[in-house]
Length: 120
Image 1 (spheres, helix red, strand yellow):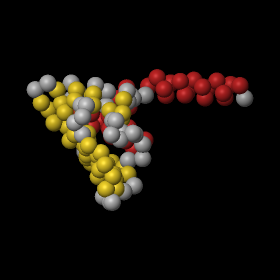
Image 2 (cartoon, one colour):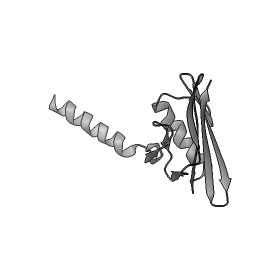
Image 3 (cartoon, one colour):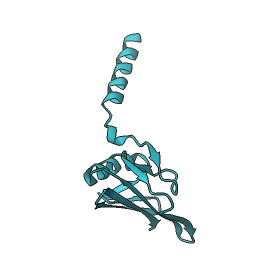
């Protein structure tokens, strides 16, 4: 029995060490409590909005960083399903009655990502 426990512990440790770094969030958007920021992105203060409408929550927020668009989209393709979002495309996710759109746009200093959450 002890041998099985050691094998299981070793296996769990290997899984943790091999987990992709892109799947670890360092921060979350202030306007939406469980939407992580991809590594390398920082939220742009006072750039978004959040309010409840009769049809559901509406959130718009922006983040900026020196990250490749493909790395951002990969991070969200791994991370968002773990948070209950269903991936419909690289930039579109659904959860319950909400739709999340990711719009990364390169600029002269890196990339700005627009996060838009709205009712279906």
